Length: 159
Image 1 (cartoon, rainbow, N blue to C red):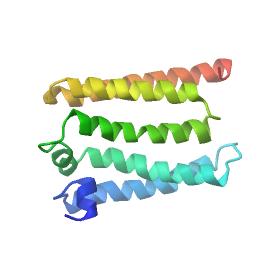
Image 2 (cartoon, rainbow, N blue to C red):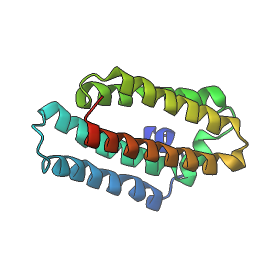
Image 3 (cartoon, one colour):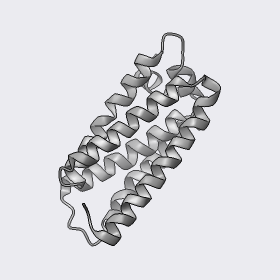
């Protein structure tokens, strides 16, 4: 197995690979392009991170939705510890956002990280056939929280 197989799952079809790469490249172009239309004086490192996150997040979501990745990351020997370790690595993303986009807002880092870890633990605690609907439900809750927080900030200013 090559590095790509170990990352996206062995046996990924050409359609799955294209589905992971094409939208990721488009997101890496669209995210900073959109950011530059906003009345914000972005620093070069922020634009670089926006580009990287556009690629990584869209690619990660799409990769994790493929059958190849599902087979690979849920193969025998991949249990609670391996899945939660994968989630914990992503706390780095939240820290980067807190530091470079939220002015070092460590409440943001702590609350988003706590939600992610609690949600991941809940997902891992239910039977496999319930994990997808539970994860989608928890994702929906996170969107509602994010929209409510954005509206609060818009109406009352940041805390």
